[in-house]
Amino acid sequence: MQNSLNVFITTLINKQTKYYINVINMSTKHLAAGSVEPPRTEGILTIYSMKYCPYAQRPLLVLKAKNIPHEIVNINLTRKPDWYFKIHPEGKVPALIDGSKTIIESLDICDYLDEKYPEPPLYPADPAAKEKDKRVIEKSSRLINIFFKCLYSLDATTPQEWAKLLLIELQEVENELASRGSTFFGGEKPGMIDYMIWPWAERSEIVNIKYGENVLKDTDIPLLRKWKATMLKQPVCKELYINGEQLWNYFEPKLSNQEPNYDDVQAKM
Ligand SMILES: N[C@@H](CCC(=O)N[C@@H](CS)C(=O)NCC(=O)O)C(=O)O
Image (cartoon, rainbow, N blue to C red):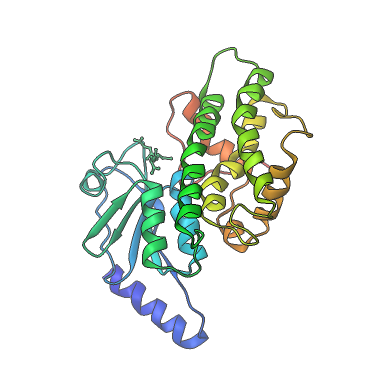
């Protein structure tokens, strides 16, 4: 019922405004244990997400960059719904359902989308250059791991010590961008590398909030700082942007093993 209502409303809006609505939010609210699995709309991709998850943000960025119609179902990851384990055996997000296919793992989902919807291409056409981009993305997982350690750690490691560890990885990424000599890793437009690392660039502010000081010096990684500012102006990034304070307010309860308030995180102004 809800399903056909959504399709009906979308069709109506499309007809009246000739404006293409390509996202249906099946549940802005994060569905938890005890919820009923929302029905899927035939012919439309369903992405299972969590508003603050950087891994889920990856396919959302690709879906938007390629203007692919999709519906979003948000999952409460502290009290996961039973039905979700049939979609993702570990109950993690993101997961994508496309008809009879279920794809898990953010990078596999993004590659699947890029192959099925080639426009605009997010990898270089040359196979060797594409492989190289994939290796850069894989390597970025080392930076992501240090970032999460810095964020979750409750030990006595100082911000200066974290800065050293972060900079070992960040400098590699900075050098990669410098070697390309372009605005984005993808050239003059964001490509797959840009979108795959962006969620952590967006979140970088929260370690400063956690430690109450800027972990990196203003003079560190100048190219990546410029890249970040330019990425932030891209409509695709802007649409999904959540500011550092709100991200921190989502994240902070996790440090004391409390359930974050998935649906109502307020940014303290
Ligand atoms: N390697 C996975 C990581 C996904 C992941 O860890 N997602 C987190 C949310 S940001 C999650 O689902 N956590 C719940 C859990 O681990 O049970 C991917 O790239 O998709």
